[in-house]
Amino acid sequence: MKVLLVGAGAVGAYFGGRLAQAGAEVSVVVRSHWERIVQNGYQIDSVDGNFCFRPSQVLRSTEEYTDTPDWVIVATKVLPEVDLPVILRGALASKHTAVLLIQNGIGIEEPLLAAFPEHEIYSAVAYIGVTRIDPCHLNHQGVHRLIFGRCDGQPPSEKAAGLAQAWCSVGVEARAVDDIRYFRWKKLLWNTPFNPVSVIGGGLNTRELTDGGEIEALCADIMAEVAAVAAAEGVKLEPELLEETMVYTRSFPPYKTSMLVDFEAGRPMEVEAIVGNVLRRARCHGVETPKLQAIYALLGALNRRNLRG
Amino acid sequence: MKVLLVGAGAVGAYFGGRLAQAGAEVSVVVRSHWERIVQNGYQIDSVDGNFCFRPSQVLRSTEEYTDTPDWVIVATKVLPEVDLPVILRGALASKHTAVLLIQNGIGIEEPLLAAFPEHEIYSAVAYIGVTRIDPCHLNHQGVHRLIFGRCDGQPPSEKAAGLAQAWCSVGVEARAVDDIRYFRWKKLLWNTPFNPVSVIGGGLNTRELTDGGEIEALCADIMAEVAAVAAAEGVKLEPELLEETMVYTRSFPPYKTSMLVDFEAGRPMEVEAIVGNVLRRARCHGVETPKLQAIYALLGALNRRNLRG
Image (cartoon, rainbow over all chains, first blue to last red):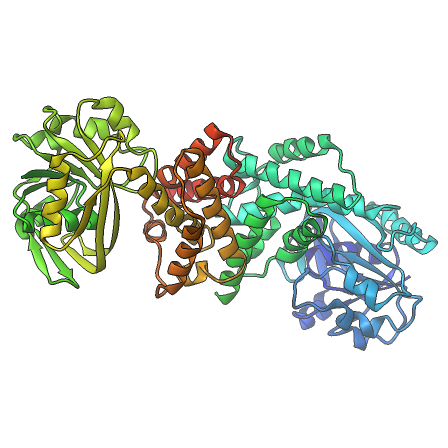
């Protein structure tokens, strides 16, 4: 199996590295640290056993890849300046090549579906605790679950089952499912309240987000708004799920959300994928989402200010 | 006329200084910089002509004032730790003494009305551009308007008319009115959206608050919620007033709100007077205020974090 991995941050490099471990020929396209990755590959310290990931090729763009990949796996952040159809065009000459997006948010697949209507396009929801110690050194603290499904709503192909199987063979809990939309919205139940509020509230960790007071109530209200938008989209999230998500978050040792980590490092935040697109869906359906509107406005202002430095 | 001024920050010292200029005997109670104020008084650079304000007495508490004041004027910030009935008790032995609160927010007079039911208690809404250069040196850039009225809803007394007259004699636009609640709510139309959003949005000036985008829309929504709560309280704010407030704010040269100045200096913000009390009134009346709820939660979190350092 030939895999071209685009975006080898912590999440991408981890799951790509596991595929290489499973015997796939995994090449990576990276924007920075090219020389170090060529020399060292990635060192991955994992609770499930340390390993080294040496990509077959380390490339600077998809155009440099001369072979026909079975899979293009995309693990970039979802930002307005990242134009995926343009970035991926070089690697999608053959419709044999399937795409898997390991990315957060909602509405992220639409530009690709429009640009490549004949390719199998999947999106994945990842659950993983992995951080980057330096560009070539990751720390995997626990959990590595991937749930993916076809963005056009069709059931997963044999090829997708094969990809899941490759991951499972090295211990990753990967699963190809029929209705990926359900899982994407389910993950937004967490991402849409907690990520923005952690930033807007001045740097709140998960313990402070579930304070039993006004902040937790705000997060719960945002969660309910997300569930209402999902329902309008035909995705039913069980009411118990909202309370379970809160209970689960309370049970964590206090930690910073990924959006807060990005914000504090002066990096762009995934405002549109995680909040803006939910809000646009709400408007289409006439669903009232006042709390989402408020956090969208405030998060956007903070993001712009942060990027101006 | 004998006046005891409690809280001689920029606003208090300015209006107190003007009364002294009008011939009143004005003493001040200050928490800090006692010696410097005794030595120098206040130097006030004003667009209307510079002047010096030398208080009759500079005191550390109201108990040190041995005379019976005609007026106790309070210009402290409205913070949970400032217990006005306790602070003022020493100066309110005689019911001859009237009280004027020059303070922001709503619901600020209730503890005093309960503690001193036989005193005339007024509250004022101040419009003034004054900043403190150092503890004894103020800069008055423009406007000095005071509108005040009795907190129990009765019409202003002769004594109140006399106070307004004293200010007017030195050019301050002071006016005693029948329905101060209208003016207090009207001022909240500005304070409740713009002050908190300037802070929560990461330090937005008035130009950025009226950006014609999501932030301005958020401010407009909060304004509409404030007007709805006012209406439920029996205070009718004309719909044009909301648009006028926005137009007026757009016309300013960009400047920082007072809450943002406090936040950046690590000082406590008037969260309850300006947001929390509005929200509690809304709950009493069953008025929906989702945007206010969101900013209250976020502002509270930022305030706590800021005060922890």
